Length: 346
Image 1 (tube, one colour):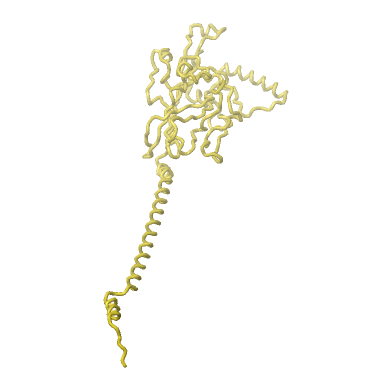
Image 2 (cartoon, one colour; image 1 turned 90 degrees about the vertical axis):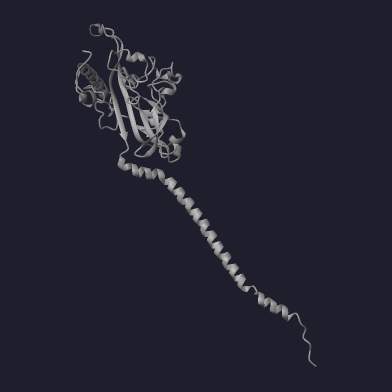
């Protein structure tokens, strides 16, 4: 059967038993048998192949994203949040050339002030084995706090005919869909925006109904406070697709199956700063301005106090000089004393 009917829980986290998975599990058991004979250390992060589920055995785990190392900003604040390595490597084997480099921010952490001076930000995705680029769009506000909105760039999933820099991502298909086959155990998995938003019309034309892309509703974005570079709202909307095509040797099942980029599911993940924390963050954002105003007021107050002290001192000296200065009558008397000559008496 090409299609099966399962619950959301089974498809996502719980998993369900499947004949193909049973065969794969038995083969995996044979490999483990030989590894035990060779005394090879077992990988604790290896997911058992007993059931199928898109996120099977990943819910509530910390190992599923691998070992991520990032810069803390202790030596250089401009490197804060920048990913240094993934699984102790600076590149991945999923893509060749520059596309395989591990680069970008780790989970959306940026240096203070970066988002106010740059037009784009990058966030590394371990699920795609590549960074996602966001470009500056508009100024918004979250709970009264001004933020800068960065939208997922249209060039992220473009093929080399639209964006030459994406040639090493091996997107040798119509533009708008990212090939992550080498990133996910060589499974025919592809990622796009929901309903093939901003993708080549080729994908939408594969279906008679059900695919309706909407601007805004199917976009991803980061809402970042520009001074602190703290994300206040994150909207991530992506779609997982599977490439269905004929398989040689299984013609009885796939004989009349056309090659289709089949959308499996898409997710809408939105996280926003709670309103009760907006006041504290607003105070944190305003704190440098408050300190600057306090500093300026202190300097002005010091000048005013110095001027008043100088004025009082000057006034005191002036009054003292006025007291020591002879009056007009005293000057007349002095002049009269020197206006006549005393005659000596014989």
